[in-house]
Length: 199
Image (cartoon, rainbow, N blue to C red; front, side, top):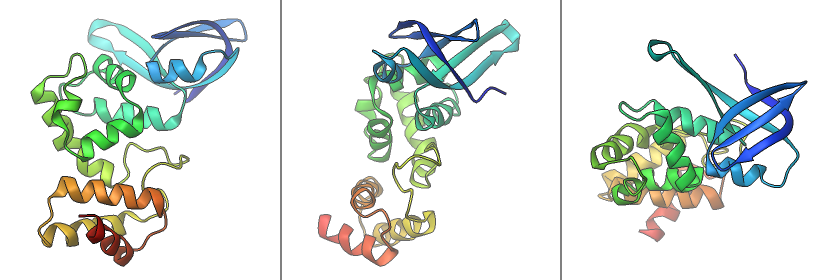
């Protein structure tokens, strides 16, 4: 299993990079997000998702500038009916953080604005991924992204408490996301108090 490929950029387009590693050129499909990170560089380290479809004898590498983007890509393709091309299109249309925010706030219109994502797929993405994202899935362990320092238990408890108080889950998730960004180590009581001021 290849985790990453490091080498010289032999070719770079908004959808593909060719990395030369010891005389071997690896052709890797990328998102616009990764392209923007690699643009102007001569060397790169790209995190790999190895896509293999035996039935059609298709084998491809999908590459990401960060582990975080790769984690989110893997989470998106775990949703029934959403393939690798749709996942790449989503990560070309939004940053990883913007996509998480759209899912957490149940913004169906924003998600279905992505080419190839219809209403049903957008609804399925929200339904299947929202709780996983709240729990911190689809976020690389070494990144400083959402919910890193605060325990999942604290987030879940605060979410439960606020929804029991009558607030809608999308609003609760949005408020908690904002709080955790500003106070990464917040405890349950702090999260609830700050969220109540925001609602």
